[in-house]
Image (cartoon, rainbow, N blue to C red; front, side, top):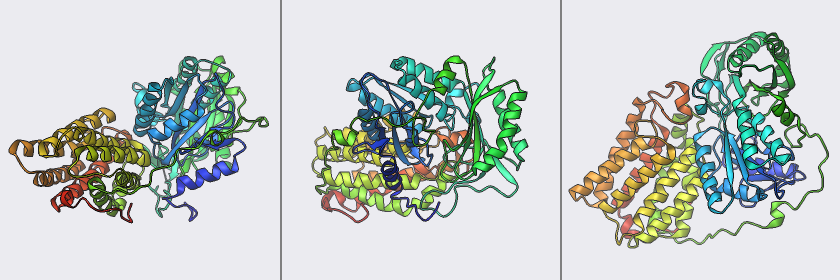
Length: 579
């Protein structure tokens, strides 16, 4: 990345610039990192809402416009948007006929969009979700539901947007989008890794004369390495891997040759004739091929090939007009209804500082985790996108601010619970991603478990942490041994329970439990991931500790040290430059 980018302001800066440049087409959702089309909402029309982390332009914001998406919600680089952001964006786009959510199959997106859908349902807004699972390198044909969504996102979004535009019902739009997903396949190759904003080195490198095959779009390396290929050889590799996955009877395909950010259009055009020749030789008719950037990975060097097996119904929807900043504007913009910023503003945020116990303990944890930010990123980059350190530090800063505003008194468990709830919500919103959702749940559920007790002792805290651990496991769909933060959290909870039965005082119990969690986090180096992106990379992370378990152990150790040092008695600090 160039010196124009800064990790702390990247999402704000590019989204503000995008809306400034394309304000005739899209508007910023008030109080959210999302954009809504000037054409939306339209009463009686299903609203198609897409989203995910930034770094993929024109996905997702660049695909908002008539005939395609009605709104897009944006997370930090390669990180899912939070449930709060999804919820606010959905409200801005809802036209009363229901909401279709569509996004790539990633743990953080599934959690946060799912939480937003539940909240909308509670308010009477119906929704459906279509996960994109087109990447054949990330799972077998027997279990397509575990595959990740990559450039095939575009086909699914296009079909869904066209179906909604012609007035289909919510169930019909969802069914057509699922049909498009079921008939879309993608396979890609990388020639060089991408570099996160604010960083000087790419997430992975490719040796001279080599290439990576079966890559993702979050800075992951490929599923396997191979000798560099000519355009003709690469076309054969891409097409032949996809042909075996197409539905029986396919005779025409929509074709998308997608650049990942650094590969020149000329290079992709040089590759495309060999792709078309190979498709025709297999008896397939390419339909309206597209060559360009549709779902990128920052500045990754590489490309991917997506095929959508068409029938008459899907072909009609794929051919329908659309008009977006990032994809082939086909007709002039019409008069627009007032944008969301003209319909009302977000409520002002309470910035009153109250400090208190939770603020002090989380602030101490923030310091320790921030000191380890680079190391956490290094651990995450082994089999992920390398952003865990950035995301958790960002989330903890928000949690510290929220705890400061909420205030908490060591003698009042209700205030402690309320502060933890506020901190958890803020952390999940700011951090995004799977880690943000899980950390947010841990803080919020622990707070809920403390609120109704007259005092907080080892027994009360032990039970609260145990219930929070169960909630984290349920939300993440993971268990101990899957190489997640649960591998530090559950040993922490077990040791607290032992200390409770032994009658150990809270400061000593926390210290002992934090030591157990720290050792358990180190021991995750012996595991291989069974959940999330890393699980799809065939044990690449064996020998490296899990970043989520490591950051959690740092947080728990800081909290234990703070309690042992007398934070409960002091309960006093009113702010810190780190927050």
